[in-house]
Length: 203
Length: 203
DNA sequence: GCAGAACCTGACTGTTGAGTCATGTTTCAT
DNA sequence: ATGAAACATGACTCAACAGTCAGGTTCTGC
Image (cartoon, rainbow over all chains, first blue to last red; front, top):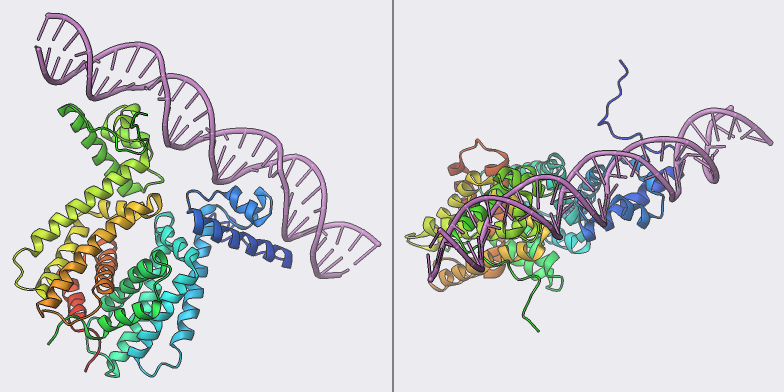
């Protein structure tokens, strides 16, 4: 009759030391999973990198899957903050779009680990992965609808548009910010933005 | 001094029986990996589903990674064929774009296994995954440049455009063809195509 | 219809790594 | 200052699998 729930998050650390250890583990996991991938990164390589004992891991996370989940949430928060700052003060939606795209590419270039972690979550915990994108899509969609109401963009299906635009960022980011680490992002962002602005049709 | 090479593909089956067995294994692997994911699908579940002995697997594939590689190539061939057929006879590039997008979404809906297999290859064999997209991008890019020369589309960076357009298909496909198995694809394809045609800017 | 090549088998081996636990150390509220 | 709660440890257990191999079956060209 107790309310014990096996999938509830583990209780947060109660002391400063505990919180520090948890963060060390999260950072180590991010580097390990980000560089070697989820399958190759074992709990023991993670604890070794964090310089804590094997068993310590299980004081803060139920499993390797659990720590990945946590990292996806962390990535979402960081990216959201980064984009919010980049967009703040844009005079209109199209300019916000421009700045956001550029900022996203720069974020990916600067945080390849987190990018990979999110991508891997797709197979480790589909629900979290889906949630990650749904959340971005929802706020993207809201932004597009508001802009449409203000007449800053043409009318259109905001839902499909939101996913399509995320797809552009995602793929262009992978190709030009992650795989190709040298190409200047300004040029890429401008080219992609031009497509988003005017499409392909001459008319 | 012999020309033995440990990473050369295994010799092809010499008899009809051998070829049949290899195909049974490929199909079983596609279903297993497509439904449970690469990590959960073991060689023994694959051989069980194919109804062959454990060791038979290693007559045709060096490892689980190897069979995944093969499946990615198969997916590439099938998708390419599907798209070529769908686009054949389109009067111009923009119409080809329209038909291609729609055909892609339909392919994803019909072949969720193959879609997942390709996505997993990203972490199992990055080179093959990258190659898969680079190949599509190259032919996409060529198509866009030809269309631009004919004046069917506005001038622009064909490379970035190719990746951006693939990104749209990829993400919209995942969201509306894979995750949401009920929504009618015609509507989605039209909405995305409208964005590709004219962009967001009112002008 | 025979020889030799091709194919098939599944029990076995060895490794890997997740998760546990008994014991020890540190923190902190009182 | 102290004791109880929180935190930390790493050797150990145990299950899961990848990959092997010695021995058996089926095919195919002649």
